Image (cartoon, rainbow, N blue to C red):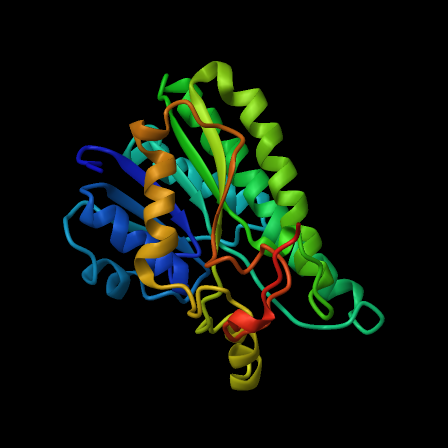
Length: 262
């Protein structure tokens, strides 16, 4: 997939998946706008990327004026982006009976409100520039499987996928496609740290036996943005090693355990 001459906005650029997505797009020839919160070392992120013409822009995506500022920066630099990857998100742990309202609001502000604001503003730029392109929202298999201690996160991702389908309907006539990629489990986030025990427990539940690697979800995002997916919109693609299929008990079945129904 060749994205030479194309431009892409990636949110949550300093996170695990943000770095992987940035590398994949840059290797494919795209110029990038990387955004994350204030204090992010964008120079370091950009130095790690192949190619040139990339730039960073700090923004609190839960703040509407900050999103407007990001849109203005992109308009001045590119006119409009070709692709948008709404990757920024948080995965806090906590029981419903214990979580406070402020934390609930923070989860939904980052995981749902921010993609809404950003998709709306980027779509306005794309429509104004007659730019056909693609928007990919990063969700999770947790949107379909409720997990004890992660209910707010699961709920926010379910809502994000419904929002994505709504944008897909409304933007289709402008040639803008909106899809969802559900990456697999990838520990290492500094925003949402996880204990080693939790990581091992989650890994043991993945049918293909490993956590997500740099090329897994990144290639899916590139595909959704590419011409190869030109007739795909409103779709959800899981790239999680089977983690969201259902319950899984590790260990191979023995031949003696198998019974043929007649």
